[in-house]
Amino acid sequence: MTERISEIAQQWFLSEEALFVALCSHRVTANHTIACPIRVGKGLIEFNPELCSNMSENELDERLRIEVIRILLKHPYERQPDGCSQLARALGSNCVIADSYPALLIPIEHPSDFNLPGNCHFEFYARQIQNILPPNANSNGDNTDNTDNGDDSESDSDSLDMLTTSRGAADIAATWQHDELMTAQINEAIRNINSWGSLPGNVVEQIIASTTARINYRNILAGFRASIISQARRLTR
Image (cartoon, rainbow, N blue to C red; front, side, top):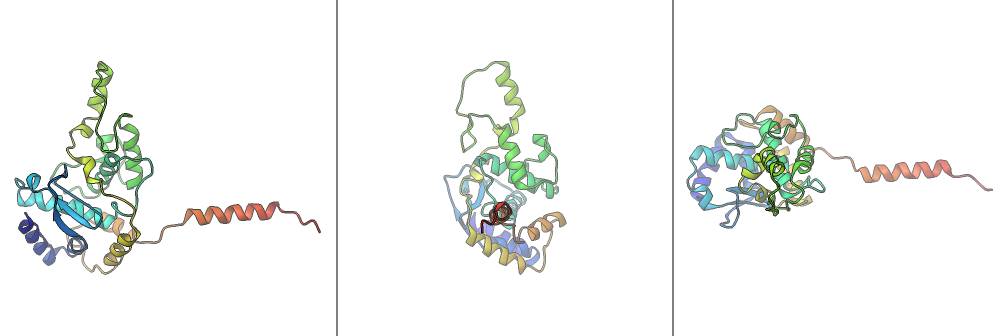
């Protein structure tokens, strides 16, 4: 499997500079315990040899491509929505990629699967999907309640069919955490990219926009509070 990934990397070196740069920023390693074919996080691109062994070259290329796009968008390192489970974050990231990259051939969750609008950001999708997850779903996206609730349970199961049939979806985001060093390294690599290859224009726009400085809302709120206090002061001299 490592050889197959190396062959894909060689192809990207010739025609997909952005994907190749992102791939080289991480260490590729086998992990037989993960429930998803490929995942990224903590500076690693992990793959399960058993789950990837029967994939065609095109499918392996696309699955690896999706995970590398996550790196460029920095979903595993920069933006971790508060109160969202691993499953919600993974599916929210999938929605962003599927909405921006409609040419993908492998099945991946789209915003329409959850009755959500397109062209929205990762945090929005993750929070909206979290709101429709079963309340007894744990952080790994597993429903731990096996109680038979009759028709209501059956209708809930139908409405959340995409969630329950996405094998290993929660494990995609199992290692995601805020990492300023990785974020800075990826941003620097993005600034040095000269060719974006086959990546769609809207994906490139999101990647470039993600490198811009974000507003520190804490400093802004602290300044606003200080201005309110100063206006309320009265000289007692």
